[in-house]
Image (cartoon, rainbow over the protein chains, first blue to last red):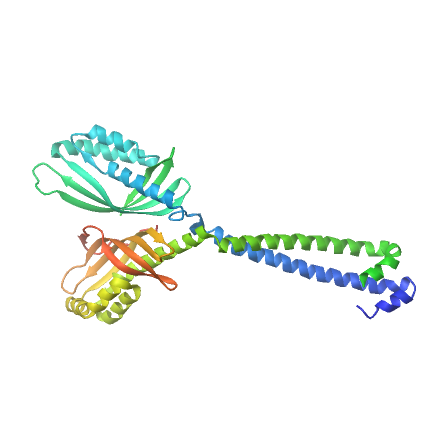
Length: 189
Length: 198
């Protein structure tokens, strides 16, 4: 490129044409190469950034937002105790207390469950006390959370001196409704 | 060099140089746009890589993976390969649990061999209960079903609930304490096949 330059100045304007075109083409080629590289870099960086921020792990706020996680744990622990406890002498109170902490599809589910309890609990004089020895929030995304609950139930019945103890494991789908975490689904396994 | 060439030829070259010049300008503009875009994404990559909450979520998921895997390992044994099994147990453990496993290794080996026990665990669900990134400690809950078979007898299924204390060990997390939560619940027969993973 530098070699044809001197005649360009010394000679007439027409002679200058070929080197100038060559220079222009070279510039264009270099620019296209630079463009391709820049686009490549942009795509690479974007991919790396998206991999870090766009994964399900990144949107899961469990333990990242410690206050929100503690709130889910406390409220769902309370909700589980309400839903899985009852006293044959206070069934109306039990149902009212539990109805405050259920939502969505689980409302119907709980109604059916409680209808059975209304039939069975009075003749057995059953009192069931639920406790949550361990709980952990598996995922938390906005107003929805999935919580692993270890549940214990102590059942006292008429004619039995020792309570029956049942242990369970639940996966609770929790939904925040008007600032309060409620049970939207419960799966026992 | 281009400036020297441009001045005398600018006017006369306009008809010929026009398209080339336009192309150069267009490509140059696109290149600038692409470089700015690359810079933007480069910056967001850098920010994501140094984001504290992303670091926490990554660590939390590592704890979850390691807790589930370690619990599985610590619940799997085959009396025909008892030494291999016990070595795997020790590799999943650290601190108090590791000391306990090493101290009792011989009695464990004898008990497993004598009863001809084969166990097969399956993690049903797991979640991280607490994480202290700076201290490198965490707690996790794991629900698992273990099918247990002794030589004389039918298989049984134990539904287990365990609480794990985890400690960061290099790139991974190991179990320093494994505590059953409440009583286990057993059923005759092998455990039901695993449902869809949660």
